[in-house]
Image (cartoon, rainbow, N blue to C red; front, side, top):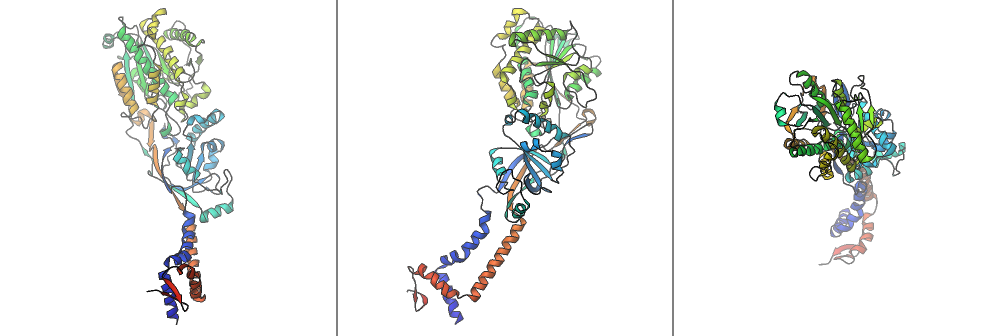
Length: 576
């Protein structure tokens, strides 16, 4: 009897299988996969920019941490211990980073805006100060910066670690619920340990504008040195574009080289003074390239150029206001070549902007680990020098910030600075006076705003930290090729990379590819297993103790009434 009933049920199920699916399987399917359905992509691949990691004179800067293999949390999570913490730049400048690190996090990710210029006013000052603070902290955990591109923003929005209300701390109950049924992101990195970059090849680019005959002879022709440094620095090397410091200085230098080298070809007389152009390496590391070049001149007693140098002009951060400030370690003596140049600069500044350049006297602080301005390296070997910069002393930290991007440079002001300095150097080199300088307003000798803008675009198109500024870096190649055509006796002078000489050790990687995958908490697997067990038990009890045949017949009668299945004498049959 039981066999006949069972056959009847199975025959109904076989003939009307789709109905049984709706009755038994669909509810279970919705129950299991419903919570896992999300509109966002489950796996993301991002490029994270690692914090600076280098060693100077035995002192470590930044963090040696690299590996990421942890769960992600935000500041509003109930617990962040043994997790990776993601914070925004606004949270970075308002929170005490030391207290955040002491919460037991295993990694820190800082989200910064795609447009750095959006950080302004007091927030900008606080961010620059925080950069320096982080670099001086004794950090062992990995610290990364990530730019908020649209993809990153979507990922950050999907970090639903709190119960829907933004900026609301998560309660213990919400945290427990999150642990049971919520999603979480797990991130893993493509790199696992920091390694010293042994093949960093720092090189000075050196050349001259002057009389070729005097260059080959021992005649002591007076010399002017024009200096700018090429590398940039910030809390994250991969975001260090250094637009104002010192892409602006390099752009002005290159335009002046074009003007003066062309002027030399058009002038029949021999230049009265020679111009030595130095684009130094390691400018952000105590002006290492300039220091090394000067050290070579001190050691070369017979062929030293120090006796020929009348003064040196260093450019650093000249892309904002005009005229730039003139920083000196000691005021130039009246009647000296340096004093004469300063007077020429003042006269030109009054003609262009209506006000004279400001002379700022700052003594060298030998107690500090690093010098403030590049001209101080010249002053230490008793060579008159000064630095031109639009930055005031209370803003010099901006030279070492990732906020120093293309938006910080004003092309019109930079063009005025190039014209101002080119006019003064042309007078010094070729003895131009009064109306003679009008030649600099001719089409091919006039300062070109387009040229300066183009060079600034090339220099800031990609980061220029010392770790990445290799000989085949596009910026190095472009600048080297340009100077080769314009300068005499042009050389690429590698710096001795021996640690005893440079006292600098750089570490990589700079950028790391990170995989962020969304998954369920381990408690969710236990919950699903329990639901399946309960569902199976209920179905067993249903089949054992409930008249499933009678219930099935009443459910199936409307479904199969229009099909080939009919009921005859209370039994389901199929018409032949």
